[in-house]
Amino acid sequence: MDIAPLLITLGVLFLAGLAADEAGRITRLPRVTMLLILGLLAGEAGLGLVPEGVSEWFDTLSIVALTMVAFLLGGSLTRANLASHGRAILAISLVMAGATLLIVSAGLILAGMEPGLAVILGAIATATAPAAMADVIHQSGVENDFTETLKGVVAIDDAWGLIAFSIALVVVGQTDGWAVLAMGAGWEIGGSIALGLGLGIPAAYLTGRLAPGEPLQAEAIGIVFLTAGLALWLEMSFLITGMTAGAVIANLARHHDRAFHEIEHIQWPFMILFFLLAGASLEVEALRLIGWLGALYVALRIVSRLAGGWIGAVLGRVPPEEAPLYGPALMPQAGVAIGMALVAGEALPDRAATIMAFTVASTVIFELIGPPVTLAAIRKTARPASQP
Image (cartoon, rainbow, N blue to C red; front, side, top):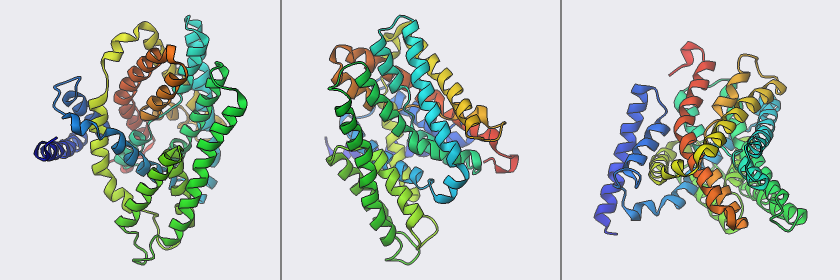
């Protein structure tokens, strides 16, 4: 495409992001939701204003943006935070994943869906939206035990989701068995953790050395791109790799107070484009195709998040008044679910269209309604003085 339309489109998108940010302040809605709606209106489902050449960037852009988010979420897994909230983080994330898989699968089976397909959709339902969650937490301006625990849960819950999804593929009999499962899961999850350690340890030593006490933007951008690139090249999870590297740097770096805080300074332009293009790529038509079973799927996921979050919070010994809020706060769902659906479609080609329709439709719904619910839950835990 010509360079002029490309530059004009990017300029309009960035200014639209600024407008959405301001609209979010006025309406007190998450700017994530505002950006997604703007993208939806500008995309193929709306006015068709986004040139094809820009839309083709979405996959690359989403990898960079999500790797930045993974670094920042991993940075919340410090020794101090784990000592204070580790029990709650582990209990909520594990129970939430298990409850979602069980409730969604069982509900769909009782409604008459083929058991194998129901289990796969239940596993996909465990995925959350780390980018949306992280941005809503940041926008809320609330920093308390609830948000610190929430960051930790978001950082690791997709790992449990990937394990549940891998097991689901074996349960429905579409892989070569448990040996293949162990090797695949070990490579993607164990390998990602090892790669994160391999990148995070030297980065923790080097960051802040060139300019004492001040990590540089070049350092931040370099480690993010290197992490994402190596993870993709080695067919590992860039989310788990980035989270691990961020946690290592946060715990081992001693040259400054905030590991790679420059990522926070540079991530917003990437996030603007990410959410706008995510909105533009939403396929609203999928909502019509899934019928009443799709509505049941969405309802079951909502019930499972509410129940799993509350039970996990009780087991994690969080304050009683906060226990019912973790389920609503963990409602958003996005790209990780789509990735799982694509893998499932390759393993189950005869069911690929159904899996994608259900996943895309639920993603549309939870991307739009999830962030406002998350923000409301966070604000409910804040003292009046802590609210933005």
